[in-house]
Amino acid sequence: MRLTLLILLFNSAGFLAFSNNAFALQLIPKSSRLIDVDQHGLLSVEVKQSPLIDIVNAIKRQTGISFIVRTSGTQIITDRFTKLPLKQGLKRLFRDFNYALIDHEKKPDQHPRFAIKTIILLSRNFVTEKTKQIKTSVDTQVEPLQDFTNTDPEARRKVISNMETSDIDAYFSDLSDMLINDPDESVRAEVARAIASQGNQQSVEILFDALNDESDAVKNAVINAMASIGNDGAMKAFKTAVTNLD
Image 1 (tube, helix red, strand yellow):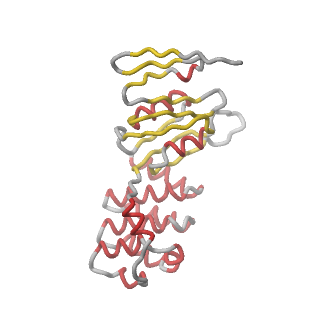
Image 2: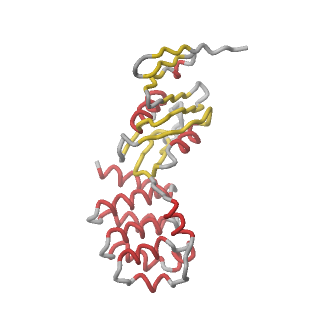
Image 3: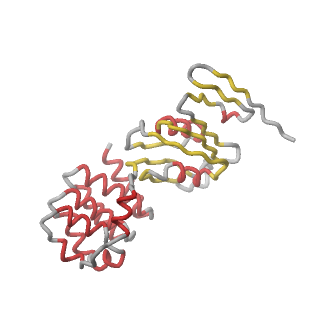
């Protein structure tokens, strides 16, 4: 039977955990954190009220994966799981964020330990129960086009957020025009998310054009939208957009 040696040294900051797995040496303060990538590339996580930046740095040290963080590193994460494949574990760990996992290019003379080359972390998704209810319950059936010209921007934004996929497809041309020309930035940002839900190359091209928007909120929404599409065309445009922000 293989035994794992575990020594706990307590101090005012917390305790130090050590095992015969070299990856498991971590200082765990009151906001506890334990990130472990084993020799098989399996990720184990036990974090409680831990800052995002600490988690990012721990993963970076153990895997060599680079990070582009476009959100606050002080945001708190709590999660616990054991021995998940690295990509699956990372998707779970960062599930509350808009993110993208970018793999290494496949080259015959290069064999990186992990397929993932870069992780890009964007804004956090804050979805409340009230938001879910608004999105899932529509009291009256209204043709979307009727409210596209409503003088109240919140009314225009809500009708777009409640659109079904079939409606987005039917009114795609109108939405494309709104993404560029609607006077309200919150509406344009909502349109970007709706267009991205189609997930095709036409969506990518329209979103890419919208990166010239004067509003930073709209630009961020467009970048997040492109990241959510996830196909090759979207990821190329996404990487170009992020690079241009530097």
